[in-house]
Image 1 (cartoon, helix red, strand yellow):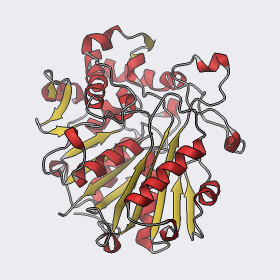
Image 2 (cartoon, rainbow, N blue to C red; image 1 turned 120 degrees about the horizontal axis):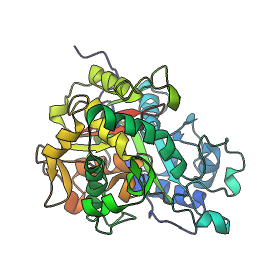
Image 3 (cartoon, helix red, strand yellow; image 1 turned 180 degrees about the vertical axis):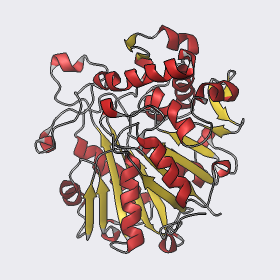
Length: 393
């Protein structure tokens, strides 16, 4: 029985904006966020005067509101990534009536004002500039290579428990690159094969250099409003059918019970408790791919297959000719290239791709008659979430 969920299909994404994703934009983070937000507002057919709410991550809402010249807002919130949580916050604000039109923003920033030694780090992520002076201390080192040490032991545990093969992680990396080659927005489009993957340097066994996301400079933004108002705006409304987040009582990396009792499982239970759709309705699937092992587990935890079955599932759904994962021969996985090849957007790119697919403007990546998209975001610990999007046209 579906649990009561008043926000179901009552809120819509009506505007999408983005910037170029690059290794070194040469621009401030503020400039990138402002560009993405202006693009999203314009795409929605609205103006800054229509925005009365802001949902972001660690980029400060008051700086953004001032830079955009938004006269006044009645609601604003910032939270940790992954991006699904920011979208969930915006949905709840609109559905509750706290505000009517929310600008949801997210930024990725790695390169300005780096020292000579830091600039050589290929995994470098957030670097400080003037508006970061009051940011909270990061939980992680400045290089995501350090984060691999968190996921590698759990990847090894999974491999030892279920006899998975390195190629199963390779499928995920190659799929991302193959899809990115159809995405002019992607930061990395060089051809990649399973053989190339297997030759990549090992960072933390069993994770290789190609098992982690690709840091970029860039920004995404979205405009969210009521489904009723969306009907009068330029684009086909993309309804938020359901959006959830979840975590267990053991979110510290070393305290996870095991790979089959992570926060991803909480998200899955909560999503299917409130959704009137099922996994059989999904036309587009965009799982988080900060690390390949998190993607592997999302296949299991969200319900495409059972615990320990992701390797066999990928074997069965691997299209060797195109180098892509095609679920049941028709459902693409991260058709935009994901964090690994489009660029590490912490999930905002996954939502953007879902919206483009449901609008029918995804170019050569377009899925025929796409009406339902599922995005699962975050890793094993304290950031997972899921958003189910649909269109009724």
